[in-house]
Image (cartoon, rainbow, N blue to C red; front, top):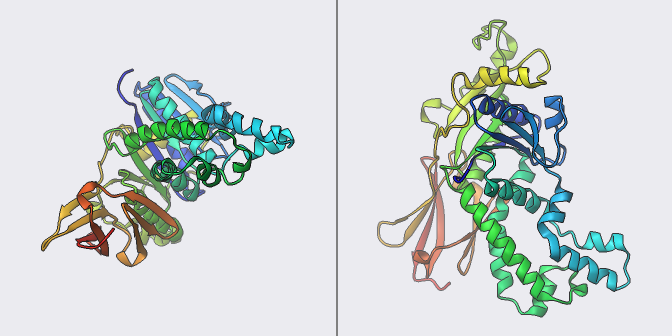
Length: 396
């Protein structure tokens, strides 16, 4: 299989039903004849629990055209960090520290997220599957994982400018005193940056990757979904759909169960987002009285949620970020952000780097050459777009 596989990420607040919707998507895709892999990046895996069958940390066959994988961060760190980790651990042991301490020092913060991305990159490059469905962890961990391609690029560029002595001190503060060979560090980061750059191109290609948010018709989940969509927009990732899960229905599957108190509580959230104006597709999935477990039940959920649709198709490409010339000179960077306001965004610029902060999320944006000798002066929000204004004439 030479072409890139279709990759679909499911995100959402913990407990909204990401896993069952991701599994329903994968099962329907497999039924339609597509060789499909569903991957769990959550450290607390439960694919096997919902499938009632074992799932390993390598692709495990579940049914015809369907494979599952529960990523092991420890195993992936061993594979993806490889020689550098062994070199660090060896140097630590050579300094008369025990093997357990050596192994701990050689595992750097963030390597579990890098391990998840490395695993995904490996499966994409292998080309064994036509579709890859990703069941992600809770919001914080997933956004941190998805921010790594940008953060890693900024970090790798920064390390390239350091002398060998400063490289050891800055790159590996916990183990730096034990490292003797900065060349190995540079080589490892260069190799990892090439891998991350490839994945970055995959994640931002709306013809390949889509991001979908799972939520429920209640206030906290809906607000969390709005934040997730804004975070994804900030990183220029295409949201093509939202699944409104566990919607109350009557015994005939009819959503219009008038007079029911729960239905009345749900109604404001079912109409919170006007469907005709959304830049993505919205599906609804009913709540079931029985437990959703096993291939047959999950297949029924897929039919109830997606109807006759093939959930592996692209339903929206999203609005891409763009830089446009501003009236009167300068440029505007436009970022689609339908559920946030400019007051919720903070900006910081240092040289060629623009740091955009939204809540506790930060994106490091390397500015293109067209914005050379320009500085971000203000931001405003209108019509679902965050616009950052750049003016010329300031030193950078």
